[in-house]
Image (tube, rainbow, N blue to C red; front, side, top):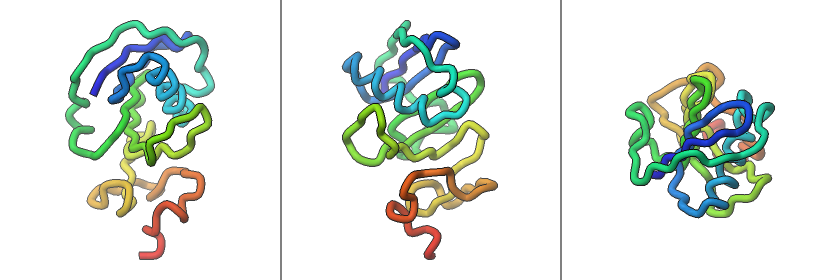
Length: 135
C-alpha cells in the first residue's frame, strides 16, 4: 500500500491505499473521510503533504483483506471497498474496524472470530450485500 499524509484543513490524517494517481487518492480519501463520523464534519481543504510508497498497514490491521486505512486524531478505520468504481458519493465502503475501536463480526465481510457490540456497522442496503443475519 501507499501511505499519504493529508492536511484536511482542520487536522492531519494518514491514509493508506493502493492508488497512486493524485486525483484518485484525493477522491478515495474524501470518500473514506465521509464515512467517518469524526472527520466528515471537519473536512475542508485538501493538501497532500507526504507520500510513502510500498508501506505495510499497522500491525493490528494487516492480513484483514482491507483496501484502505484512515487514521486521524487517534481514530483508526479499516475499510474494504466493495467493487472497483469510486465516486464522491460511493457508499460501498465496508468498515472492518470502526472509529469506536470495534471490529465487524459479519461472517461475509468481517472477521467472524472477532465481535463488536453492535454486530454490524451501518451500511446502505446491508441485507442485499450480506446474508449473515439469515444464518
